[in-house]
Length: 246
Image (cartoon, helix red, strand yellow):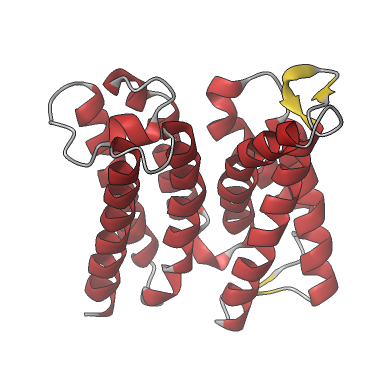
């Protein structure tokens, strides 16, 4: 009953979030590029926030992962033209507004969440850190860049190795990853899923957030939904290898 309740609640929350952001984009309450990044940032973080609802069972992670896999398949079906876009995902989740583009970044985003959930789940800081870097870090980098450009030449200064990225955006990526990973990991530590001392938590989140920021700054925009979490997962396995798993 616990897992069924968790699955239903998670499913309803995720569908409500995606539908709401779709309506905001369609009705031009927010620009499509803003709705896309709001979805990118909030969906994964909200999904992880609901993980404690699931039972302490070896099958729980696969049940949670199956939900995200199902949403990813829906994205694919809309992108391939099998389903009508009732949730207005094309406008809210893509750069171009073309349904085929759901098969690129949005689809990869969902597949990464599915894989991380099934492999690491809530019992390891590795999965939490990698998804926080993807959602909180990569997701907020764009907002930081937009804000920086409004602050004048200094805020709009671009990176030497990637003139499409700004120092303000990279700083937002670093802070976004760090400021989302620390409270989420604290939540899971308080639930007893794993244990890290406070100084180990801060140090690990800071180092991994810096790694995510560096990878996000590279000129590989089409694949950063994969490269950022993979790089952060590798680094967190090194700097958080001393975590105690319960």
